[in-house]
Image (cartoon, rainbow, N blue to C red; front, top):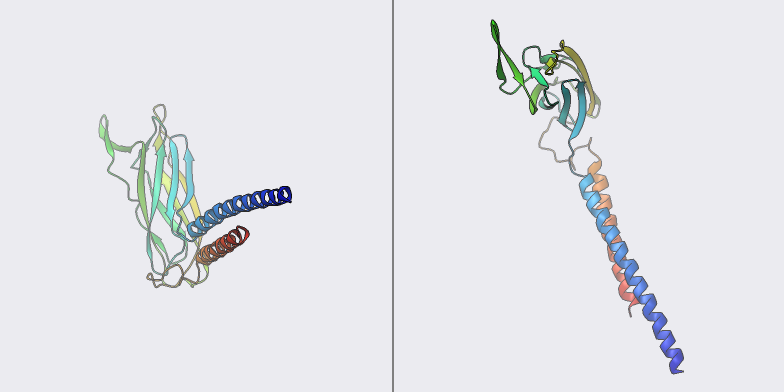
Length: 223
């Protein structure tokens, strides 16, 4: 009888240990799921490569998640130049905005260049390394909320390396972004064009429910 009771107790302890281990694993998964859900509801910056040249690369960074009618954007351009590569300020400019109709693109805002003596001519202003520039874009007032707006623009770059100076090249960028209502004070939860917050809230709620159920089962099995 005692041997049978001891065996029964040992089996119960092993089952309880396995259930607790399973509960801990499930709780870890729930925590990770909740963190992922919270992160999915946060704003994330986008990245678009505009140019890939022998002298370096150009990226369009910090693209907004949505546009507002009449808004003026300042898109950030990240220049990552090769060792020995440079960008000439003269010949690097914004060419124009093709879309949306009625929008406009201002002059490219570049950092202060490094003057290089050019003999008989005026010094050439160049930029090296990694740096940021800004591109102002004015959107039209008649954008329709809930629609997609295409930003379609042209940029011209002139760069070179230690061995060669390249002719100016024109590169195009195209971005499709949803249009929201013009009230900039709206939070993501109030924005009808932003549904990621719903996913985040749903995953957090699911995680809390799963955690509560896991704790209840664990306590019940340990009785």
